[in-house]
Image (cartoon, rainbow, N blue to C red; front, side, top):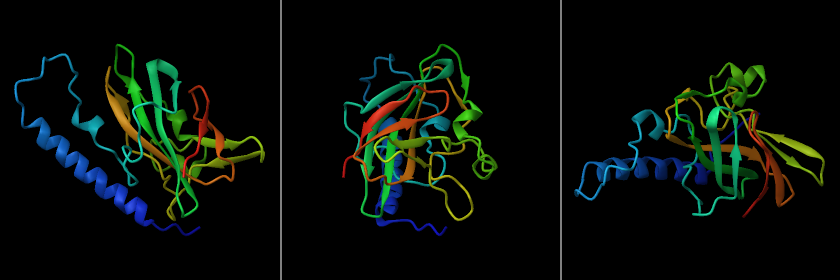
Length: 191
């Protein structure tokens, strides 16, 4: 299967780099207005490992769904966008709501050998089209790497990580999102 990066994916990667640069610049320009109550985000959690569109692209203030996982983890899904290339990109934030650091469960990567050999990811995520009775798995590039956030292992208490997952686009405009160890949710697909 040959995969190509769409213009939207390239724009998303550029937007992620610009957003990271702006965030770093804003953090260095303290105006004394911080009351110290906001938790500091470690550099490891602020980096989005792997290639892909920006997790902030297409997000709104109100999430599409909030899912609870094991060990105090939660996943806030902020967008499910269909693009003209025949893909659906899910964006969100993985958060450790617990009081202690959590090792991200390996089950999130799924159980497919091709995805597991590429390290920790959200490769176990699926979309289910209940009307068409089909399940859609995370896309992979030509080397078997999942088109999702990769390379993370631990989240400290209160930390968040921007995440994305890219799927083939189902014909339905509403799908069931599933991720191992998390509750499932029904998502509307826009675009």
